[in-house]
Image (cartoon, rainbow, N blue to C red; front, side, top):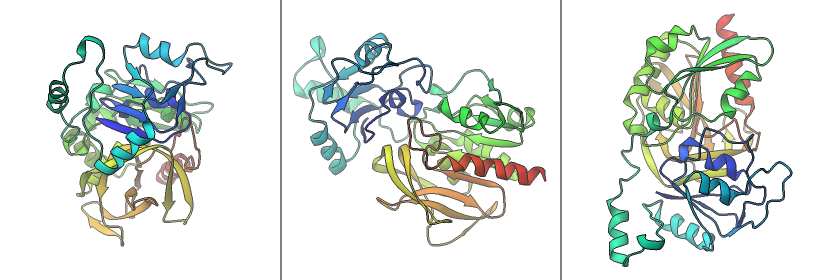
Length: 344
């Protein structure tokens, strides 16, 4: 699927974000690669994008932290990149017609247009794609707290980014990262003070197992926090539907309003689906009342949910914000406050 990202920096974090699995990313910023690639900033163990489209790749990286060029990294990991494309015209095309299936052809793969179009159309669509288990960890692992351990959190990996457990560790949280296939019993085997559901790729309508696990967490009343795919899982767990956005939100400059405080945050996004929940007031669910806590100022899309009768909330964006901005970092503190309240 061809999608566009509006970030002007942080391309290494974009490439290694598991939520981009099976997507060809078009960068709207015209000059990409000027800071090269280093070994400190990847968000996961590999590049996940299926292809990378830029207008003007940097010929020479200019950052003291760079150890490789962008081209070398793409080549080493077998990811196709294409340049010399009018990416702003391509972005306008995707904005008008929506995210769509795509192919990049070169060399012997170039055929007549009809044959190449047939190959593209034969590719599976993102709607109905169940991808979380393909990018999640196969084995549980622990990210230790930095300093004194105050809490233990079970994090269900649906495509988690490395900075997310780090942000929790900075707040004295030991994070037990579990595979996407983890059961409710496995979640509670770590004796968590809170449960976290991560970002991830694919269609949330296919994620029946994570929805079932989240309902088990809601029934027990354990503090719960979800981001991105985790927000969509919470929406489904509460009985709301989800739908595919025309072209999604991707980049690090998306304006969102916190309806509780009125504050506008500039946020990092990567999602092609959204929750279909009423924004005009609280709704009744099997787990008590819930309200839409955040909305996107560009198009009114639901960007967060907050339960009023249980300690659970979620947002559609990425508060860990590698590579920025950091307007939403307070959400990790809000999660800590829920766990403190539960302990008290």
